[in-house]
Image (tube, rainbow, N blue to C red):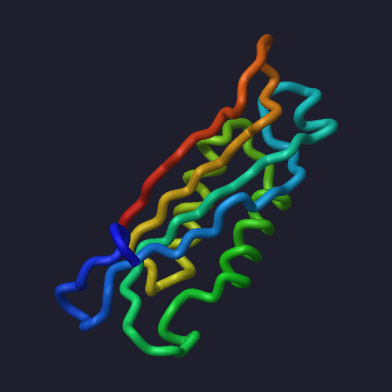
Length: 130
């Protein structure tokens, strides 16, 4: 993994990133009444940093399906006024429930944010480490 992996000093594996990019959900986050009533699309990217030993065993890495499920449950099952709050909530949850993960970057995109002009995207990015 050029540019992404480096030898890990302690466990004999490689420090690497697992990325789930572009997870799309319809949810009800926001400060305006219309956002909480009608909802809007949200896109979430998650980058997990962890040691990856060179073995072909799911038990020694992170299950993508489990990560997707945790993200989906929080994004669609909770309400946050700010995407900043949602991003921190996701990062804290993933670190709390994934002991192999050393650090996480979460991006929450709000592509249809209620702004008075044309734009490509609005997003917040947070990084949490153990």
